[in-house]
Image (cartoon, rainbow, N blue to C red; front, top):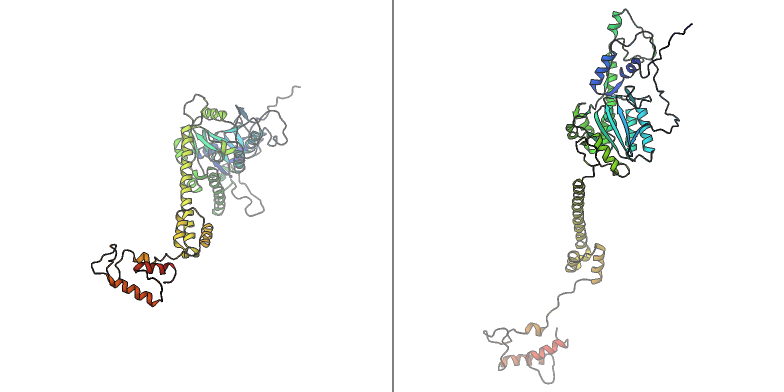
Length: 462
């Protein structure tokens, strides 16, 4: 007897598996893709027994895998990881042949690329509407971790929405084409009320359960207000994590507040750059050529690649000299301004410390000289002031110095300073003789100023 032919179950996910991942679960997915999935699933989810097509390849095939082949493509020292199609948490899908790509598979590819010594940079080739929320955050953390070791450039070719954008946001740089669709930073959860469908077929399900919330969100009836509120709170938690993740990856380019302000909109090409969701416009080929021409380096320090042309001819692009020169000039100017401000502050503090010291009060002239004319520090200036002591009192001119050029005793009113005294003026001689007699002077009596000057020189006159 000839045995009946057995048709093998198709590979890849079945409708039931897709429905299990889409319905009643928070999704980071573009709303247009959700609508398509719901349209495909409409009326096609079996209610009774149904054969489940096996998922292939097996979800655990990466564990302990020993293989000489890579799990990703390499071109000229650049590892290329494709993120194409709808994204799911578990599964070994690393290409688009199944229609799904798993976070688990992508993580394996990134790990292998990071460990491969022949890979100096990584490109994420993105064309995905997003997918499951669970698992995306772990993969995004992996992208951020690897980007610290090797530059990762996310090339949106031509969609990175929701979960796909969450992954791209952790890359070193995001490059878009003029028609790339970027954004949809939001969360959606879909519930199908199938009670009408079941009633039309005469089916009335009964749910027997333990735990008040065990069957919350089941498809056999409408949502109660309490269950709807719980599901909304769950969506809100994922949303908070999502905008926080984007802000962490984009740094000052896109804050959490600005990410929320997008209200899950998508943006095309240059508008995505203007909103801080992307960095520049280029092509896949130009980015690849630029990365191939760069020397190997670590993370962000080696990540900046030349602004690419929008042409389609692959060509190595050298770093833009003008951009580098501008960056250096801006850095120099900023450093110079900061240095001047710091120097002025330190100078003011130094001068204030010197002039405000107790030692400066005793010798203000020297203190000012040390503060303004000599670059002494406060301690040095204080030591100098202590060594100098108090400022000496101004020297007092001698009597002879003060008398020189002045009118003499008994001089006529019209006798002016600087003209000398009259030799015939007897009143001056008499005054000098009287002064000498009063102090007991003996011997020949010098006349006039000569005697007074002599006394001053011998210390006999105060």
